[in-house]
Length: 615
Image (cartoon, rainbow, N blue to C red; front, top):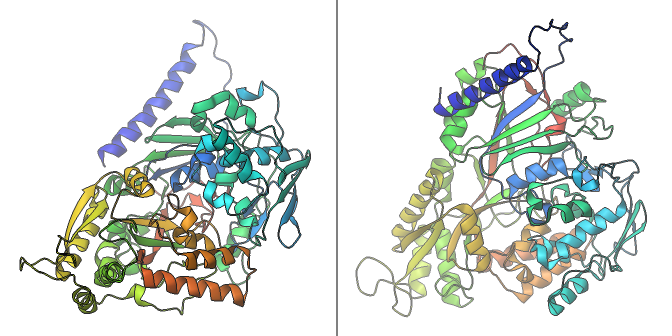
């Protein structure tokens, strides 16, 4: 047993013992023991570990996935996703129905269900606080407020809510606080339960934004005002769970929200989806959530996180580390020691991508001159993605052909491009042709002007990142290019990338919408500093992106996706390596799990059942 497991189990024993001692201490001396009350059912607790630390639980501030997993279970958007439907299906959550859409996808009217309440909190003065349409007005206005510095403003602003950007700009220009009390013409609660959003341009897929409860779930103004700068530690929503304990980057505990309304399990799996149909038959009509508590440890190192699962300290491991896939699933089959424990494996191709980001403002790898484009394309051709998949990813990746990711519009499995090619011979020829040659005969290429050619690559200080770094170094050495690495924690590298203070960085990205347009935002000029980490600027591409925003789904829009892919491949601001498979595992007591594709909430749809299998 690992030391981590021993510490965790010892802590559990002490908590139980402490509770017994406390119970004995309150009985007066000489008292006759009362008859023991009937034993209550044991709490159903889900234990698992995050592989990356959270940052905050204030939705307006979030871009990282692990914080959003937590907020996705506390806050609720107007809409959510069916837990079993594939392809993804958006359905009403706190809204009474799908939005009433008018004016060629410019007006969206939504009715909020009466009788939904926020979780109890001192900020409400001891009174129940009902969810109303104005809460969604306030939530969206917070994203626009310059004081929140929300990383999601660029995405929200692309929807052109009438008057919202102007309100933000007035606050910026006058150096005053955002005025939440002045009406925004395109964002109004027209009565207690009716929200109307007016856009200046058509947005046929605007509902997908309203389904992101982890970011745009309703926040109560009283709570924000009560907690001020500490709001990130006090999330209060209408969702099925509430935060009851938080030790930053160490332990997160959520409990069932006792005031959660009567919501029952229902779903629409495909007719030929046997596993989905079985889950529906098992759980249909059950009150949600089915578990009482979720206890999360943050274990960023792969080995102790894997051992904490194998040793039985966690019911579930999210994303089995790629380094342990061959141990967990040798030959693609569950290992015998895990099979004896009736552990289940869930393997899912994800709507994600591994990216090499080139800073287009960097004097070495950036720029739009012919030699700089040739350098980026040569580097991309020289990256041995088949070996990366075999050695570092353990076969858990399919080659990427473009920025588009599986399960999204714009993704075409038949599309093949240079993006997936490993061709070091062609890479060397490109370098020679455009003047990247070894002028001083030291074995390393110089730039066309004779200055040294050194690639500075940002990386993280963990085993998986080191392995990928070693592959980078070998691949570039084979081309005659020197590399050096700058090590920092992932949040620091993200901060540097957003500020444009880097040359090259490898990062993973996961789609949050079924619409593939969101992945193309990584190339959209106005999103520089947010999603556009490459700082890529192209009027031609921006025009394509803006057409994607307004066009309805269909052949004309598909043609724009294709044009955008070809431009991105030609300029190569990103080398897209592949799309990953994710394998999750669970002990038999966890039932009902199905990995979400674009959404974060799933705890309410699973149950913890008693089992006699030893852990």
